[in-house]
Image (cartoon, rainbow, N blue to C red; front, top):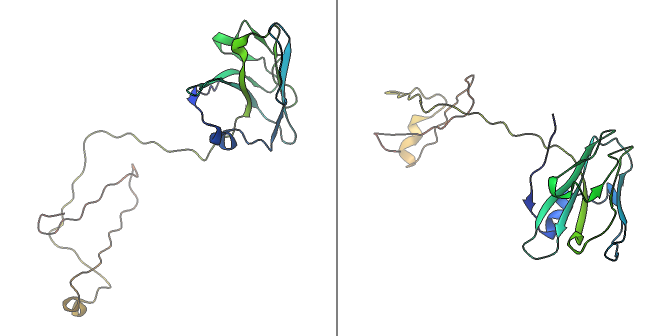
Length: 180
């Protein structure tokens, strides 16, 4: 299975979130002439990375971050269609992924970001049908509540505990005399 990241809108302040620079070392800013060859290198010291990426942010204020290439450790480079015939790479080897442009064109200008894949903690999604359960209690036993103090205050705190059910998403509504 191959994991691909989608294109996304990018603003410069996002770079520290998406591409933590302290972990990855990539080529410095480079200026070349049309037709020149240029290689962009990215490497990481430390733990082995299983997937590395190069993204391009073209020039212009409404630019969209574009995936150029990705590669798993020891695997071949998988280029996006628009870069496939113009860019070259030998894939990720030893936490290193380089991209070569044999004959640079004006539209190759932009900011290139090297990235590694890091997973978050995950988000659980449960999809349920439209049916729902409705429980109504005519009387409720309340424990630990001192009724003698109720006349001193106009408010009381009630607690409802629901446990041991699936799916574990619940929407509770308190109704007293038919009103929420």
